[in-house]
Amino acid sequence: MNDNNPTQEHPLLRLILSAATLVALVTMVVTLAVKGTRNDLQVGPDSQSIGEGSIEIKSVTDIGQWEFLTLSDEELVDSTESRLLGSDKKITRIYYGTLRLGIDLSKLANGGIRMREDTLDVKLPPVELLDSNFIDETRTQSFFEKGSWDHQARQALYEKAKRQMKARCMTEDNINIAQVHAVEEVSQLFRSMGYQYIDIHF
Image (cartoon, rainbow, N blue to C red; front, side, top):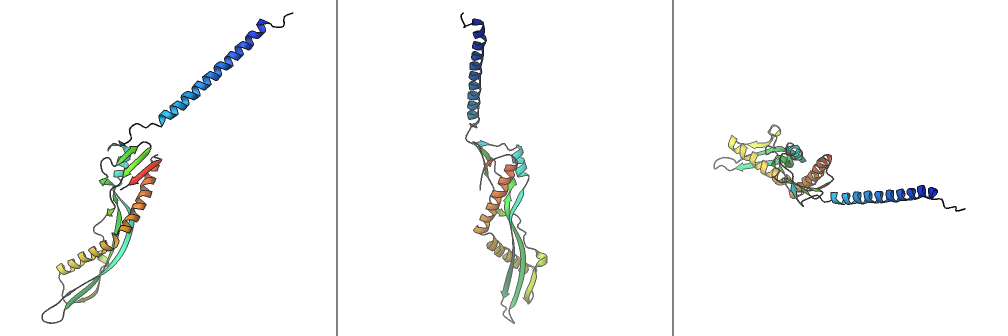
């Protein structure tokens, strides 16, 4: 008796063919998936400006002034005037001020935020003194005063105190500190918007 029964081989053959077909389909799907993933890494042009009307730009520019370093200072300023007759006039005053260093994001340049492949490139405005009226005149003290001094002379002392405070506080080191804080804070802002790779410079 012949043990090879065609009616028994046929289902087995179909099973083998079905398995081979399934393997081929799986291989094709995996190949297409890998190919699609590779294509997703190509993000168009090398540099693409984010439009001025975008949510990102509006969110940033609406912040306006952003303070990154606060400096308290006090300056002793004096002035002396010699008189032909009589003793010299002299005045010494102490001025107190609070200088705020930061950036004004409303001054963000057109094209200041761009995409370079998968990296967000942000060019911030320079660190500056956010408020020019930083002297607290209510705390100004007359340390010594001899003779009569008019408003113009006192104003000259005030302006001299401002110059001294700016010279003492607007140093390269302090500006660098403010820039470091700016990079940290602005990076955190854009990460909250979903950006992973961020390059911030001034």
